[in-house]
Amino acid sequence: MTVTNLRSLPCLERNEYLQIGTPQAHEGWGVESSLTDLDGNFGEPRIETTWQKGEVRVQDIRYPALFDANIASAPKDVKPCEHYYWEGSKYDED
Image 1: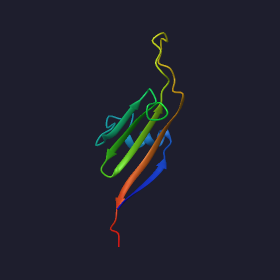
Image 2: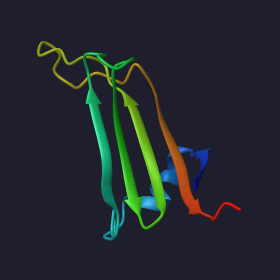
Image 3: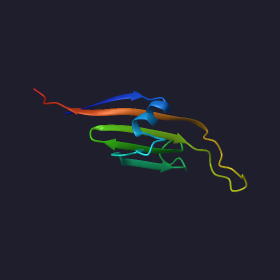
Image 4: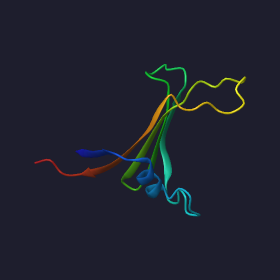
């Protein structure tokens, strides 16, 4: 059986895990899964990315505003981003 431990991460801690802003950014991490659902076909419009390094995963969720070509800069997200740290552990059942 696999148990998943999940906890919310503030943006700064998420950046520390992925080493954002350093030459080693994302080193050893790969994208395990991703979802881009800007039309909201599977719930609220969002972009999800799950980064994996060994048994450790960091999940990012963004809620972007719809793009408008008439706006000179990219619109801000409609909700704050979310980040989660999760680690899977395996154990034998008796």
